[in-house]
Image (cartoon, rainbow over all chains, first blue to last red):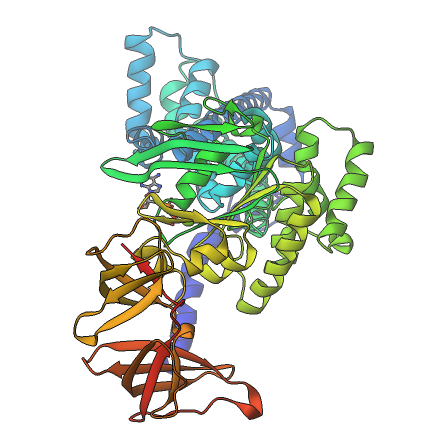
Length: 259
Length: 359
Ligand SMILES: Nc1ncnc2c1ncn2[C@@H]1O[C@H](COP(=O)(O)OP(=O)(O)O)[C@@H](O)[C@H]1O
Ligand SMILES: [Mg+2]
């Protein structure tokens, strides 16, 4: 036992190192005053300044934010409705329909959406097709979170609301909605995060001329991993971590409110 | 008549959870549905509240058929066993909820909530959240919330079931006080017979979806209509009997090898009918053999078991033919009745006006 414990710690350290050292390196080199990702030269913020002057990068970032905002709002509304419906009516088929995209390989989803948009709908690929694709794979995540929240609650609460004089709508507004709000917000943040750093599905559904942040980064590193790529990756990472932290703060809240 | 159930039936697949139940409940009554778990009490309550609808039959509130009226439009409120307080609202907001739903203004709501909370002794908990309250306090909030806008009818589904024994007794008195105080009709559901006896003006005893008897607690206990009611309410000795004589005042009952006993007359019983003599344990007196006072119904017996319970002693005695009877003797302190122990030879006896013949 006494010998094994340090070994376990070492193993854990190695695993975490593999996970986080590359991320740390990216962050570090985004502040490195050298065009080569080789050795530390000195501190600078010029790569970030360069980023802000890069029109392609800015337009990709704007696209990403737009897509993520629209897609996460739509996915949150639809996913919440799906979660409520699955919980309330316990349908046989709906859960599978809503939740399958969550488990589906992204490449498959990307290819099938591409075929569907081009061959079936004859849609010109662009922002709209990206948004639709992102909504498709995000709904399931929101539905899962909302349904989990509902399952943890006493069904009698909702009956009590009706019993005490609330119409179905007012019962939803005054009781159901406030109770599932933490789940809805957590689901929305998840949908936003999934959308903003999605590469595979976006790659298939973007078409020509429209690019998002992950696509832009990919096209840049085909040439070389520049410090500018490090800088934009760092920003993306910061945004994602913030959203995850906010979602994690909301999740325990939802458990406490059960009374 | 406040509430009328006419032949209400509810089926779940092949199971008839409620079968042809007819009840009349008067305004101001404390009415109890009593029966074992699974006999259909909750199903009946849910139909009255509007969460479920009968397959057959009608439910009328003050003469108006409730069919098709959603729960929110029935002047009927429910106290759920799990309390069902809204966890995201303070105690005051919970209690104010029904008032808010009936579109009262803030100025109207505040004093009504205060008054309702004072009634259940929770005036100082208005700002608390449900998770900060004890079980008994949650129960009181649920009551205040259900009563605050004075429904015509209050339904309570085993509201004391989740409380511990001591609290349950306290809440029992509290419920009686509250009901007499607000004057609202209560339909109370329980599977605990002592609760039903203690609280109710009238009790409906249910069994497998049917109502077996509707009566006052005294009559339910003293004059059960059948073996089910007799056995479900308290302990009861049930002895097979054949009617040997029937007069206006008495019945002569043939107990087979034990011989004949006398029981109170019951209407419509004819000589030759077979049935059951129901005797409560406290109606049976035990005395040392040879020292018995002269009672009409008297048998030699042997004590099989005696359980000293403090206020009473519970005896199990065997008659000459091997049949056992349960008997209960009060222990009245220093001048207490003689205590018997296993193996003692005793005389068991009961008065000519004790017991009850069941067809
Ligand atoms: N929604 C339902 N679906 C199927 N069976 C039900 C449903 N609700 C109640 N039952 C059945 O009906 C019977 C009566 O139930 P219930 O009214 O809850 O009894 P009680 O409240 O007296 O314990 C039980 O056998 C129960 O399993
Ligand atoms: Mg029940």
